[in-house]
Length: 142
Image 1 (cartoon, rainbow, N blue to C red):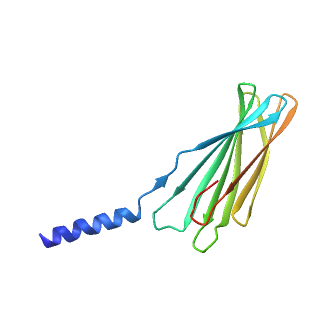
Image 2 (cartoon, rainbow, N blue to C red; image 1 turned 30 degrees about the horizontal axis):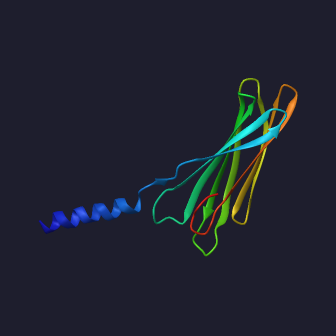
Image 3 (cartoon, rainbow, N blue to C red; image 1 turned 90 degrees about the vertical axis):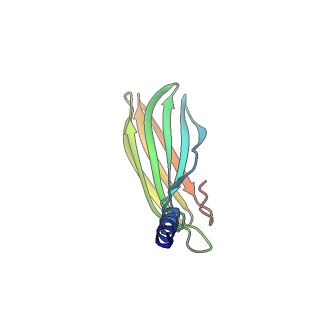
């Protein structure tokens, strides 16, 4: 009986350290001019409760009136093992839709912030989607 209890306790402790967590996405609308706008959505997740690495991404859906012309996503990771958060990796991707073309994108890390810029063309217009993710020392992304 004692072995069964010890085994059950070991399983509970192990599972509590590897549980994944996620937060609900927040959405923001940004006017890009000429009838274009971008809807941003940010998501964050940590692979374990005891981890000092926070991962997140922010997506921007770019529309011309009600037509989706492109989607860009900025990916980031942050180290929160010290008294400040530090951006450690960044990447940006993009896809064109309904005649929109993703031409290229750039991203970078600076202190506790990851920034990225995605470039799209659609019907003779060149539109730029700028995304950024910052992290607080407690692992909150904003």
